[in-house]
Length: 429
Image (cartoon, rainbow, N blue to C red; front, side, top):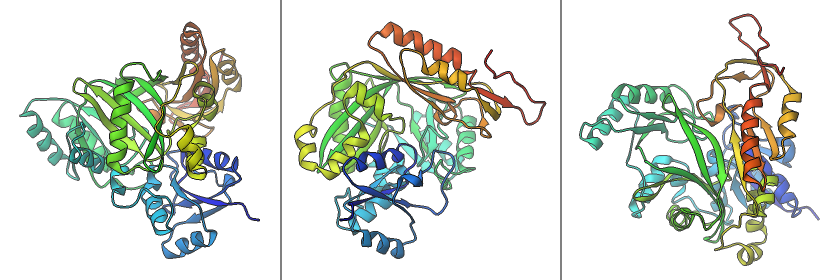
């Protein structure tokens, strides 16, 4: 008897973890590309992990999928949300539906939906004209120069995000967004500007089934600004009774309900302002930084496995998880390194990587650039050279190893400036 089939649309980044999670239940996955061309800005789908790849071309692709009689359709990344909603609805499967689909991938539509429901969020405006954005910002602040955030309407990984304080900065940031595609390769035709939310930012990850939500974990961001761009340094796992986690739990439930996220994973970023929690953005997909091993060690679960459980064994999910909150089993953090260097990567120093991996608090190291890739100064999550997953019961050991990671990180990559003579300055001593 053939193994059951499921469908994943656009398995970028952690979407590649879904085949193993569903295979644990004997289920194979078919991959669907929402667009013919796959973006190279993010780790793309590893098609070797899927039973088949279908490039979506309308009715012919739908007929191919229908012939598989899939049990579910889910999005592997934001770029797949709209198509996953449409396919799951057309195939009569568990679905978040198409009525509110745009509010789950279009950041402007998200904010407008939350405002309709009376939920706290940033003021916002979108336009294809940078000068129009400047005019709107002046209306918000009565001419005062308050910070605003300029970003693409749909993207990820802090791509194109700028914090602006002057007219010139707003126009420049908007023009930069309009000049290129988003990280999924789709042209940016409009730019979003939002009022600056003052406060600390948090990650809230969830999995839902039939409108019942389980919060997988809450993490606090530590970041700094580099030329108006947020550069993330670490994500720290919090305990569920730690402030302001209870307020975040209440707020995320209202957000999920407002956006119609009844099934599957969600990854939200929320700032706690003096007026309370306010959504920065949300994706109806898994956390792009999720490491299953670290999450199982520190939380007793991981978002990919929980997603499989919710779709394949909903009664078990309802009994064990739905409506409940995670437990932190041990401290954890994700360290994002940064660099000021630029050039083409000519060599990865594997001994330097091994030295990082040998640190007591290091669980895993993600080397984000390969030989031939361009290393550039860190201005966002996409240009962070290393992502290091860390845990240790002793906070002092954890902190000491974070410092050691940063000290070793610059020795990992050997680069060459293609406009000058080769250099070996990036080699370990």
